[in-house]
Amino acid sequence: MNPVIRWFHQLGSPPYFDRFAARWAPWCYLAALVLLGLGIWRALFGVPADYQQGDSFRILYIHVPSAWMSLFVFGLMAVYAAIALIWRIKLCEILAMACAPIGAAFTVITLATGSIWGKPMWGTWWDWDPRLTSELILLFLYLGVMGLYNAIDDRRAAARAAGLLSIVGLALLPVIRYSVVWWNSLHQGQTIRVFGESSMDSSMMAPLWIMVLATKFWFAGSLLARARADNLRRESGKDWVAKLAGADR
Image 1 (cartoon, helix red, strand yellow):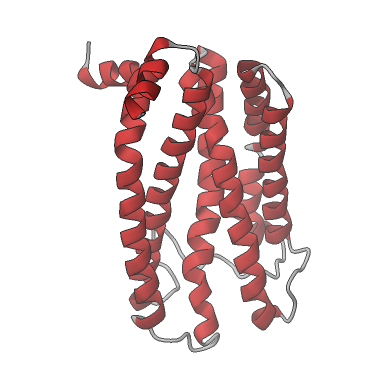
Image 2 (tube, helix red, strand yellow):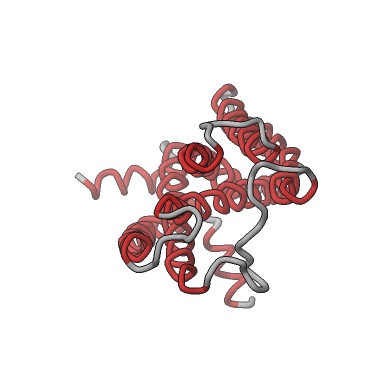
């Protein structure tokens, strides 16, 4: 068997995943903290003020990575849910449900920082702008997935029902992404491009990519930690969990 395929098969084993998550979650958190510290320092002291927005633009370094993560996490949750529904892989159910609260947190940060940034720019904390409204709907979808998962006692049935909702919710992601293109939006147009030239000055880009990496590592650590906890709850009656609990005493 191909080594990569064998590794994925092993990762689907609850004891193996527990060891994997316990080993790598702390390293992901450490990498995230280092990158967050570096990114925030450079965002505050390493780039000049914007010629139009002044220092208020610096909230971009939190707002944009969080907004990107709010979409990325929802998409990944739906992928995990689809794999779980098609191939009945329990670990993918666990990972999908672990994504929801993390993605919801990134969405809350996106909405909060957007409101703080919007007050000096637009003169209001909130406007029913297509981008803002669709991002708020995304938060409701995250909360719906979490609520549905916790409303059903059977964990596997709950994960399947909540996972189906996340798959349906995928239709919202392109609406959020292209809302500033499709409608006459108060929200500014796309200024930062992963592929292609950004309209944002190149001297301001480095801290942004550092913060993007930091949020990715933070998400990875949080996902492993939450999935590990759910995995242990589901496997609580198994011998390997009892042995692990005895070893920790």
